[in-house]
Length: 202
Image (cartoon, rainbow, N blue to C red; front, side, top):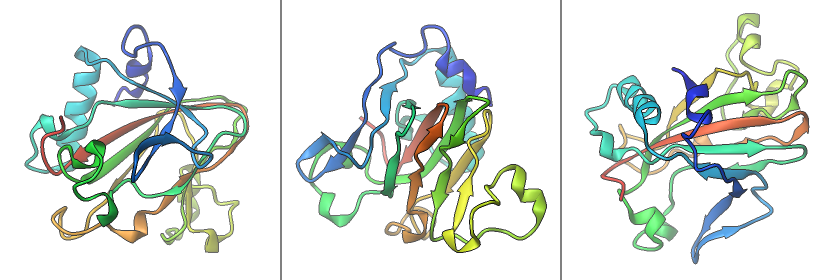
């Protein structure tokens, strides 16, 4: 998948703003999330990326269930503290961002750009168990203690995919997919979020 294409040229609106989090009162700025984000303007490149993301999941899901691509810039010290991509019951019938299309069935997070000197900036899932074998160290941070869960290295061109809901997307949220974008201690990274929803995203 050509993640880099979505970050080049006119594919994004050109302006990154402080990333928001969803609260009961709507979207708001929070110290929990200190990155900057922008929504990619739909074009041939972004449409191709979304279609490949849809096909990858093997679900009978129309493309209208996919949210617009979001690019996220993490500079020095920036992070997204532990959170889940699915919406809990406290948002049911609440803010429009949670209502539009229902809950998030799945998530992609791709590393579009990562500086060669980057330190930190991994994606940590504290409730998952790391697989055995040193071959995984090219993708996972094997320097982390195993009781810290799984941390994916910010390797440019790699992507992490997970499902958010139990029972094939028809049940409630899966608590195991709690995750965090760890602080960047040196360098920078640009990530790409792709979320699929239960229904048509408005």
